[in-house]
Length: 229
Image (cartoon, rainbow, N blue to C red):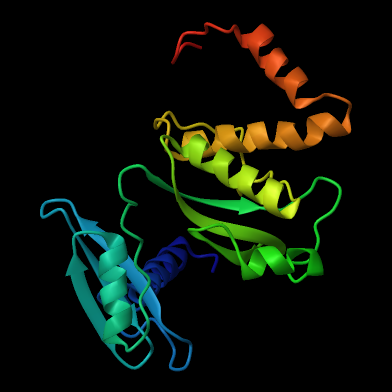
């Protein structure tokens, strides 16, 4: 294609073919799932109406549902295909907190079915159920407390005193990240994660819990202003 005219014509035709392929795979085109490939769901928000629409395609038919949230619209689509839908839990009652405590020791991570968990699995603290988290034993809890960390501390103490295990992990993968969302939000979970990690690791290095508490008082100041920093 040395002729510039032929090259331009080729580029024009190629562009139209690519646009046709994009339309066929897009929202308004033909089936964008092959039969037997499973259900795919796409959701988008109508900025004017403030509503979410989800469209599901399993290669044989499409179903669209509209709702106030992406989760609900997606759940309605799954139900339209006869599937079990996932919906987020409503928030816990005032004065109650949801969290997961994982037994993930720094030097060992026993399998979730390890015999040392037998009693705890059979009789977990009230409001908790045993489960697996990333290959480790965990407790998923909904417990009372004035604040999130109060509920976490009480649960850790009950497990430590009753079963001899220190649950020093709240399942926060990136505790260095931050969210200033109050005493009961994700930021508080990250703070709890860091404190529990210190409580487990400090004694392995010769620092007692009293040493760690003294370190915090000396470094931050006993009268540190809330929210400062």
